[in-house]
Length: 151
Image: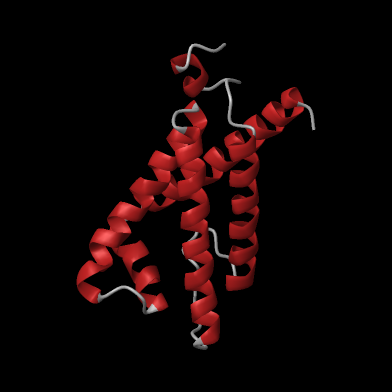
């Protein structure tokens, strides 16, 4: 793949990943934190005293990642964070399947309900986008390029 093509594919992947993280984070942030805390509680992975802080901070982290990717600021760090977060999501979903827990909603995109397998597929797709965005990280419509003295 030529460097120009890699940059364009990376840009498309970065913008799509940004949109997904922004949608996910904003959907959760606009709803009462108690709603997302109830979804998180169903996973039986977070101690009760940490449910509300977790339900408040995770949407903010998703929004920060989404904005970073959208603006092209700290792209590689944002891609690494996005891939890691989606790996954690896959592990959490896999653990519910392994323990035979029934989830009413994965909580992935707020009001959008996905089965655990559907959600894991979306997470895997988002990891692939993060890899493509990482490989194509450059100066195309990115603050990183401007800060580095590029176009």
